[in-house]
Amino acid sequence: MSDIQWPRKTREIHSHHFDSTIWNDLKFRDNDIVIGTYAKSGTTWVQQIVSQLIFNGQEGLEVAEMSPWMDLRVPPKQVKLPEVEAQQHRRFIKTHLPVDALVFSPKAKYIYIGRDGRDVVWSMYNHHSTANEQWYDVLNNTPGRVGPPIERPCDSVHQHFDEWFEKDGHPFWPFWENVRTWWEIRNLPNVTLLHFNDLKRDMPGEIRRIASFLETPIDESKWNDIVTHCSFDYMKANATKSVPLGGAFWDGGAQNFIHKGVNGRWNETLTPAENAAYEERAVKELGPKCSDWLMKGAVPS
Image (cartoon, rainbow, N blue to C red; front, side, top):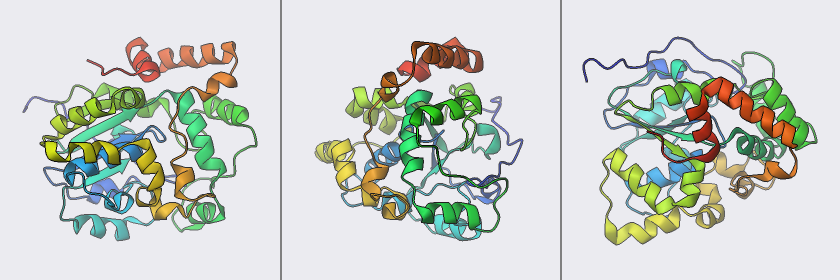
């Protein structure tokens, strides 16, 4: 492993959401788990799965508190870092950053979850359009914001997609570089890629694959509990445990944050020409192999 070219941090990212400098001060442990996504790609789902593997099918886990979004700038790193440092269990933290804005630990385990960008947008629109005034106030008015505030979305998910596509992730953060940087490190020994489609197709099989990657033996006597607690129905019914602040930032609460968990809603809205433009852009940005994986799933080699 001495000749492996490990990723190096080359930049900081600041926005209404991000403060990437927190990674500069995190004291890694050898068994840390980092869960990465662009966003709205199954992050909360994989956090739930990892929590069930670590805590052996235990019910009622406060997953949102146990597994913080590290690079979200609120609460500030002066608050967040001591809380993470005080954790006694195996830590599993999340990020929405591209790889080159992270400090990368060769001993931590990294799980990245992909999802077709069109599905991401439809899920993100629900997330954004149901956010309440408290959400906007915290992101826009907490001291330290860099760049413009985040504004309310338009009334049309179609227009929202157009703006996201034309401005690469607007009003959140760039999409293509996020996927591309994680794809580029997929063959490192401490990195694995998941896909939202594969989790939907065979969740038990993917849970076992995650357990093997994390080197976490499964207690077969708890297997049914683990699978049940990772199901969409269970997570929807117990959403306050998985969603930040119990869903206080969204109209309809935590159950609206864990919304539908379905793919392909864009088929009813986007034209064949728009879909073709998206797929052509994906190949241009990611290459044919990565773009095919992002659209369909199946574990990449």
